Length: 446
Image (cartoon, rainbow, N blue to C red):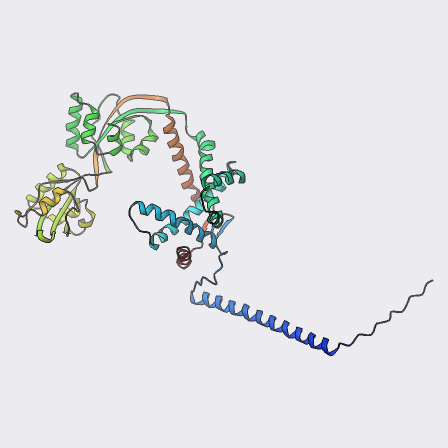
């Protein structure tokens, strides 16, 4: 049997003075580095702690990777939010420039608030479309971005890559949803009416024109002269064939749809009142209190009404002694003066119609004079009357493709609007006023 060899421990070599010196320097260096590291960490923690304690939100401390928006299991950090704001700024500036408005930070604050909802909605669309088996592949997305942003600065494209990808993907998903899902939700045919309609200022005018139509005058000619709805006017009163659901998309009027689909074919309807519909027409009653025509200044009492008929009735009540302020508070559609009993100060001409100025600055008028109804098509008032004629009816007529496209878009919009209310979805924003301020300033200052 072989004998085990005894383990003999080798003697340790003593360090030379030179080696010992190097070793001690190395130890000191490590202690210095370690100590400095501890100090830096402590200093950062102190600043962060103080920021939390005192309510600071310091740009150099607050991490851009902090989650600020969450949609179910998907999170968006501060960096994404800032880039989304910054990406929208030049586009908003271009839109404002079309109206001669200079961009300032107040518009960015408004946009930043709505952008939170936009980010949440886009992500909900992506998630819910996936449940329907609808998605956009990376290859499709890349091809679309290359097509849309071919002339875009590559460095900017890289900077806003994630924001651009999400924006383009949402557009593509909506197109796919329209063609692959909502096309099946909108029928190919439906009950329809061939409708003729005009919107008028008063019941008396509607009755008068109804008589003229029954006397043989043309719907198109009377519409061109009197109609106060821009779409009806553009169609000469002939709206063509449409299903019930389509009419509110052409004309913002639930009353028209209900009346048209219950009307007798070939018969001109009685005047149908619609209280809330807007029109670009009003009639002023003005009482002159003080005027200085040399400096275009006047102090007035005014009542703005929706029809000449109503204005004449109210003027008669004023002449019978009723209180101007009380009638203004009750009936006037001019919001700026209504709550002040009709009191209005005018410091320039051309604020309203030419007829308004002619009355106010007429040198022959005495204070206390009340005007006749003054027509003004530069103001907006509510209310009016429909005249409707159903030329033809069909209980099952193929829907025009343009109408189907509109109805698909309406169905998509309703679907999207309902996503945040789905109890299965959790949508949260962790942005408070301080964080939003920080994000806006960072995006604005670049």
